[in-house]
Length: 474
Image (cartoon, rainbow, N blue to C red):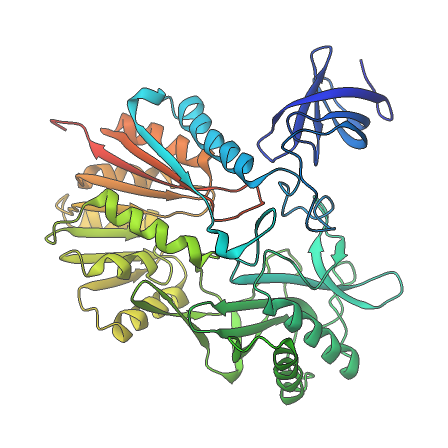
């Protein structure tokens, strides 16, 4: 049995679910962050369990042919980009394998029972030498202080709330660096304190930046414990100067907001948001549809891949123009409005009231009249509407785009009762997708097609869109 602080020489043969390298010593599994298949490593065990151990790299004895140099110096400390050490081609292969493994192992499907055609990677227009960069349109940076009491922002180290100082994440839009630095300068100049999680003192908790890539709009939202003591005009001026100094002529400040969060928990955004400059939203486009995006509304973080994903929804649905479509977990109506011109009617449901308001406004600004929206939990609203209809609530196509936890079982059972010919599921977690596919199959729906999309390059996450059809005779 191996124990903490033991040194081993191992060969890495696979990647785990969170992107960690996996090796074995006498049948004992060793998980190593930053290791990739093909590496021969000297490692040190930092945590030993009965059946496995977690280790760190002490020496790369022989690098894998697929190993590349980390483009980001913070990659191994930050919990975000865990695949920086592997070529992008191999990253895509691993993500495709991850989706297939979940659908077959957890979902109970054989590979010959459905069509998995490919994984769609991020175009080279956003790439640096070794992979995707600057593709994210939303950044959430915690604010704190270092041991010398200097104000810092960055990302939490893996499995902790220790901030790694870094204003410039290479996955974020390039303007984020200048926004972060401008806010810190404002805080230092105005003697504004960062929030302290232990003492629950201080004001600024997070810097949230959203960018409308197509239009160049920039929204800066400071998450604060209170707003009265902040010099709002000065804050806006510092941010404006930061954006000007960036030299990025395709970016302009269109909104500054203060989100009030007095809670002691880890939830980033509070319930109250004040717009102190410009509009309370930014604008972006997917295809020919314009979207207004507020500070608290969900919007896909990779707009370059989003249009490809939504085109897949249209492709899988194969709309004829006379369909009634339900878009569940619709957010600000992105998919609803994207498909509205191709169907008879679309009904969207979303739990966040502000997102529904945004969806209704987005329908108006695009002159779309065949879309309606309901605020509330899909797993509550859809069963209620079904019961109120006496079992006559019908749909031709149902689109599901749930959060990482997947769909509620009650919702899936109600969707099956509505008997849509097709159900299209957009998932950000292949494990919960596979779980839900298994239940759909029990209720009369079979998986016909799946396609993966790399929305989150260099991270371990992958997006998948699948098509399900009702069994004949059901």
